[in-house]
Image 1 (tube, rainbow, N blue to C red):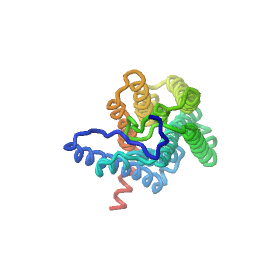
Image 2 (spheres, rainbow, N blue to C red):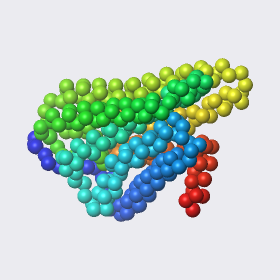
Image 3 (cartoon, rainbow, N blue to C red):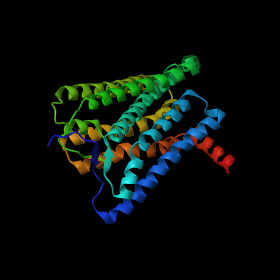
Image 4 (tube, rainbow, N blue to C red):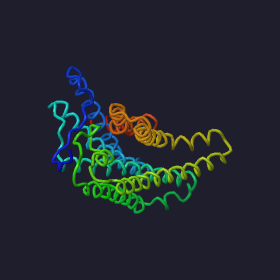
Length: 305
């Protein structure tokens, strides 16, 4: 039956009532760990003058985007587990979708900016401070935000054109634009084309920028004569490369998995990896693999204690 809806029903992670307290504790712990870890990165970078460099400026913005990204979905999921509710209003669904795309796209854009920063640092070290000046760094973050906002609003405009839905059951624990298009009772072929085109552009451009930057970085590192010099140069990119692989690996896995082997439960598990696990692991990757962050973090914690 085609209806004009005022609310949707999200899919539970599990229908087993005995497992609900376990999932509640698990996701609450992961969320608090994500927020605390990323906040520590932001506070450490802002409080330590040694870390007032472009790379750590971008890292603190990435941590802020990660907090926003995970806060868009996880608190709602935790509340739904606690209250045994699956309902989300139409306005709430659109709002959640908009912020999810905004912060998700922001993550991708900032990872691209960070790749460009590493490219300049390794391939043009003598001109690094001139090229990566505070004005350019601020501009790059602003452009990342504006592109992400545009992407988010385009997706919202496409969904707002849908006037009725044949079902109100969303096969995920958050509002995904592709899910809403699948539920629409009107012909969504044109909307699908536009949405996937916008998604491909907003995904393809950052990945292309990262690949190009690392192609130049690897070419430059291979010309370094000593093994120690090559290791030192590449070690500055290790943390960023790990986060890029984790972010895009899980994202691509989600969409390829849902396209090739559609299964609501598998989609939910993959979405948890993408929206919960990745933002939680980012601070650990940077703090464990980066000596500067580790030493600054200890100094910050000692001052706080």
